[in-house]
Length: 339
Image (cartoon, rainbow, N blue to C red; front, side, top):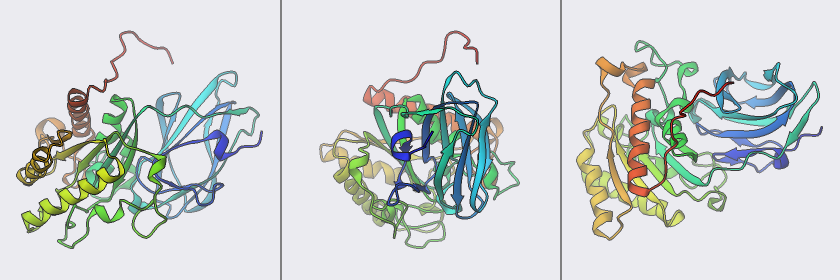
């Protein structure tokens, strides 16, 4: 059967589809969704660096992850499957944009089978803006390791956890070390400069008509406040950023998070939120996610939050969002499902 990206794949996240036969992604949590019948499925992908990792989710279960090699290679994604069942495959980019970009070139069913139209997108649409915490950096590391991309897991970050609890689509824009105004080294280097472009500043413009976020979650400030900073400039830049976002998503709820590596910018974020509330916008909120509890949750690599902390952050954030918006949370199953 001839595979076709436009017919057989749904994309989640910002993909550069200038060449429709070579869709390219870079941001963490960018994903492709397919439905097929067959005992084995393979993909051909081109990775820019050889340090990207992808999560393999089959029929709703995260089963495996694959390290992509630099250049163009074919990968056996799944094999030994029931060829009479229609399977749903998700492939999520676990690693952040600084580690590389992925071009998907082909999917095939070498032992026979059929591709179907992809699963429908979720109705609720969220967008997450952040830094290394939002990328899931360090969450699977022993504390001693500060750089181990195979143990970074955006899929199991608070982003993926909260979005899936809310049964939502989710886009993620995050760069390690970045802030709203300045980066961790004190350079004027903020995420707002990347908002309008598909794969970050200097890449093709993003078409906002493709995705209109109902909720935007911002977790930026840990790096801004890791070096001396002008509070008023941070607050003004943050306000301007939210106003820029609301020009694209006019009816969105905005959730400004603080935590979990430091919280010394909480008062500044509260002033940002107060500004919008005083202007009559009651859909902008501050969410205090607290600090890492090392005795209970442990540390991730480089003092980053562990998976345990991400799980707490994700559940607390999803519950907060649900309370403020009325968007429902997925319920825990009440009986065992056989897989």
